[in-house]
Length: 137
Image (tube, rainbow, N blue to C red; front, top):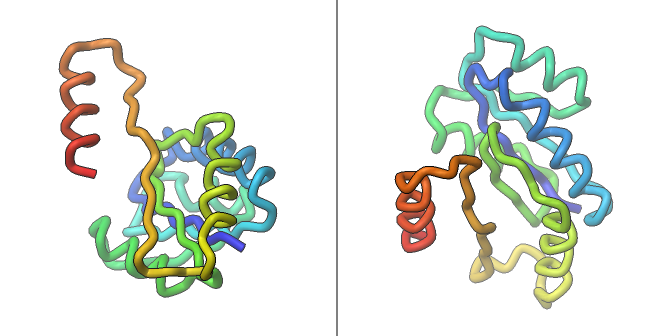
């Protein structure tokens, strides 16, 4: 099983598309727990998360705090952290499933992976940011 942690704070605008892309990716993985770690949303974020059937936890505001709270709540040895405005591309779930399958011991602390970061913006600044993120990871 995989636990997917999504930190949110007033993320209603992008969350439905994210949850839809995650649901499609989970089909390739099997069973997954989706955890919304919310930092105090005042918009419809939590209503959307409930409608999608996710687990919801409240956390102190701040992405790091929210990610840690989500990880503490997770029921799986495998964690996937994504932003509330992230779209898992077709085949992303299969990539995660292959990564997990290729690891001899579930939850190995020495194993980590990242997806390629790509913005839906054709500007030069977007390409620069993508490059910076690639170098950073």
